[in-house]
Image 1 (cartoon, rainbow, N blue to C red):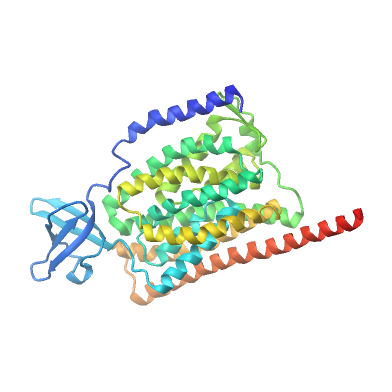
Image 2 (spheres, helix red, strand yellow; image 1 turned 90 degrees about the horizontal axis):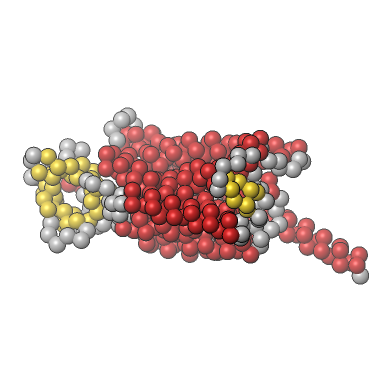
Length: 444
């Protein structure tokens, strides 16, 4: 790294540190009106409940709103409670159990989900979060807790995968650091957005926001990536730099930074929007890679292999930062984090190994296919969340059907990802070994 480039990177991080005080108070603690704690008792006759907030020594009485009954309140369980204050005192507006009960089948499910997520993370560099967050929500985890727990598990997994890909010569460390600088600012903005939604619409609003964001972004980005991969695979053409990337590469606005591994020289102001968007999505819906990776490919002009590897560096840095922020809010379920991490650490190394054998467009095929299937899974749950908010009516039968569609679509996404990666890896590894044997015989 030259002195000029080193000074540019240091200047970027200085800007980042100077900007963080603007977010002071926004990152730590839950949003106003949202409390975590336990209900000690409930009086159905009086319509009240005794609530012990986290860190408090004494309980406070809460009136139950019209939509909440005594049976809706779990006693002596960690919950998220949305509380409104008026002249008559504090009223419980919404209550949801924060940490799900971990039975054997859910533990096994989380380990499998973690493995597939890790496999995707190592293979396509997106962190696999667009599979992990919906998977946890399908198991009954509140949206905010799924986002926070997923982000917490992300940074150690990304660290392992990023190191593996860097050793293979695929990750551009400088590009990852530059993008991470603006991604951290995006994380702070995203946390503020999520807290605003939780404060105004509670857990149901958070679930709806996460799902709608998934559906919209997955269809747009996943559809384009899959179309591009299909075009290349059918025509047998090599992946070419897009016109947008070529135009952005011509922008000469200091600071200009050279990225050797990616083979690019770009203005910092070209990379900044991609990093910012990645951070915002990472904090609000616990994903960022499916914006960061396509952004580096189609906007910066990096290859799919380099983009997917470099994204792991960005995921590590912003995952660590976001985990600290969400941890201060008490929304991380460490049990989910450890179970998913246990499975993903195996998958991420296998996925990283697979990138050394496959063609560039295969990474795009896997990414696009899984994105579109997951979009179906999350889209099926949107009516249910609208019903939870009272914005539409939904029969119990219809709700059950939509829940089943969401679950099995997610299972199909996991199975499809694992199957494609496994088949391609085995096929390409066998071909590579056959070529090595043929070369050895010819030389002999």
